[in-house]
Length: 180
Image 1 (cartoon, helix red, strand yellow):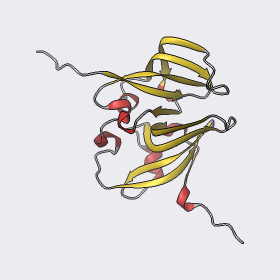
Image 2 (cartoon, rainbow, N blue to C red; image 1 turned 90 degrees about the horizontal axis):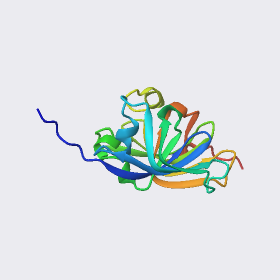
Image 3 (cartoon, rainbow, N blue to C red; image 1 turned 45 degrees about the horizontal axis):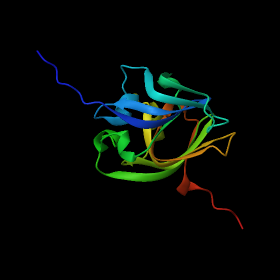
């Protein structure tokens, strides 16, 4: 019995760990970057033609490798060049058609991430944090900033953050009004 051939392609990706920025290409199937990162059968991510930089000097090249292998559990955020690179809308949105955009700020021990979360129905923080079906959650029109290095600022039309690295989530429309 013959198995159907899968179509693979490379997509540009900007991957952030606690100490490094890895810029290169990730091989994906039709499920995009989200399919690769949320694949429970693999605990690693391969970045091809990878350029490494330390977080405190994000534009200074440290090294260049044909392939860098990262432990997915140590990845904080992956920034994509295009929203479509995250994957088909059915996978990115979880199959729902009625979506609410929520402007949010997320923090990890190393980064702040601001953008729009898309949720189906009512937002439930416990579901977001405990959802074992996907460790990497999409955020759109994202701005990533390193907490201790504010000049590291990255804008991305679509990013995937590791829900296990989240320390705090706040909705921008719930900012306290200042007393005058």
